[in-house]
Structure formats: structure tokens, C-alpha cells
Image (cartoon, one colour):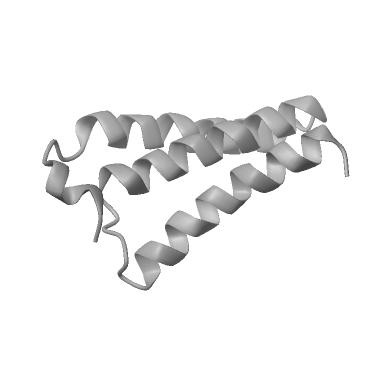
Length: 84
């Protein structure tokens, strides 16, 4: 396994973690943590896709990253919303 595989697996893993936690109601889908996991995951996955020069996923994951950042900064300002 090489560097770009590791970066991509961590990125996708964070996105999936946020999805599973939200699906099983362990994390609100409008919480800061949800958006942070998606932003970091999307950023890492986009970077990994860039490393292998696969532009469809650079665009997909880059968009995921940007939308998650917008959600993070526009979302709830209440620290109580950080979890479930």
C-alpha cells in the first residue's frame, strides 16, 4: 500500500464514519463534528485522487469538502450540537 492509498482510505473512512454515526443517530447530521468529519474526509479523499490524477473524484471529493466546510461554518454555533 502506498501513500496515496493510505490518504484515500483515511479520507473515505472519515466520510463513512460520519455517515454511519448519523444513520444510527449517534451524531446529528447538522452538528459541527459531522461537518468536520466530512470536510477532513473529503479533503483527504480529494487530495488522494489528485495524487493519482483521477479528476472525476478530485471534483467529487473537492465539492464534498467545500460543501462540508460551508456547513461547518454556517451550521449551528451551539457547542451542545457537537454530538448526538
